[in-house]
Length: 514
Image (cartoon, one colour):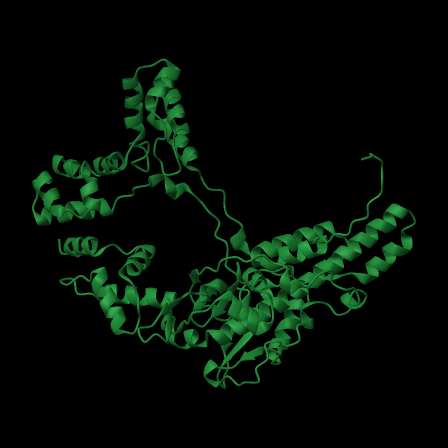
């Protein structure tokens, strides 16, 4: 067979994600705080973008005018419900801004472009009333939020160094102390072997130990300890409460964790009353004295969706204006720049920035619309939760919401990630409302896993201290309520809620009597 060059024509298909589509996907799954940071960066990067300072007031005027989305009670659902029949969300972007870009087609269908994630649930905060009546957390340039500024506070190492000047006179001891300070973790414990300090400084281990014991007397007491017992012992010595009896207790802290008080009374040679007093003293101590110097700036949780009861029944759903970035395109500035641009590079730069700004505004509008659709259907599906509490939470999966609003399941997954809704019962992550089903004893009804966990906790909280409920007994009680569940499932849910076993709870109840 002769070998010769030739031309072949092949046809193939490939899926390509455009930069605009990647931007839309990224914005859709961002939380409110992350989104605000991203938009702030875009405002600094793109000269054609500017803040819309009038956005919040316009939104609130619209809300007072009744442009909210009412959600009827699930008890009065009518067959004509159409999930797409939602309020017009064109108010989320500047109509004049998008005049030139509205004719531009999307490169892909947003509803079918996302990967599927697993739904989760986190209860995040208490009820929020009159959200946004305080300071502004947006880009409107309003009052300064002074919570974002924290005073310069001493770190743990700075606090210790200030005390060394008065506590240690010997220069050698100060050098040893400096090395020991470098070995501290955030909780105030030594992370390495002090003998390595002796080898590095060519001194004796006894000299290092002497300095360590002096450092343990600094404020707060308990620093530079090598174990929990050592830390608690240093604090008790500082209070002049350290004696052989409590020393024996500290040497057997594992028995305290096991609630084996009979063995502890024998080891400490103490009565019930004495043991109870020693345990109470230990409870008042600080097991991690170094953590009081950890200063963390608390981030405010901003719900993406607000929900309130409707006077005539049902619920009113609205997007939180404080969580919506307010940006628009300065068309006048764009016209001025375009008229003054003469070089090819300048024209390309202005055109690129204008296109990027248009896509950002369109993506923000698409994100707001999608969140509104998902939140509205989510509230409609879980109406009984807001009426009755956790017991009214019904099994729900992403596909149910996706089918109801004619979106892809993966889109719903991304929308519900890192998004929060403020309800009369508190602030919840949207994924909290998605929970698997537990079959009923009648074979027809089903219960949400979250409501079953709530029932387990309620049974344990109400148990008689003299008759601690075993997992098998909990199974019997749940089946009497119509919940078909296995003992291993009860144990799994109990452990997930960090509830001890029946044996451990019995010991804890006994300890409370001491």
